[in-house]
Image (cartoon, rainbow, N blue to C red; front, side, top):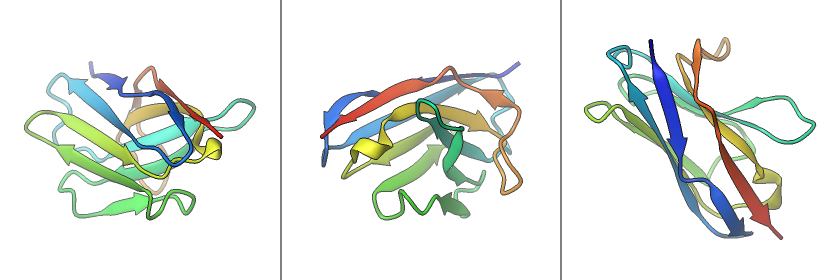
Length: 119
C-alpha cells in the first residue's frame, strides 16, 4: 500500500508563489515516476508536471512552463512543485500521483491540496 500526502496549498495573490510537497509512505516509491495533476471546478483533471525516477526526464504542461518546477528527493520519498508567478487560472485542487507517464496517470493518488489564486 502506498499513501501520498500533499501539503503546501493555500491562498495567494496573482504573481505570488507556493511550494507544494508530496510525501510518500511505504516502500513502493522506489523506481516510479511521479506527477502532479490539478482539477479546477467543472473541469477534468489534467497533468501539470511529471518527473522520472532519476529526475532526468521532466515534462511540463504548456500552461505552466517557465513558471513551475518539479523536483524530487528519493531519499526522503518526496516530490515537490515550486509554483511561481501564479495566475488565477492556476486555481485548482492539486494532486500527487505515483507512476505518471506520457500514457496517463499511475495507480495511486493523494487526497489533494487546494490552491487558490486571487486576482
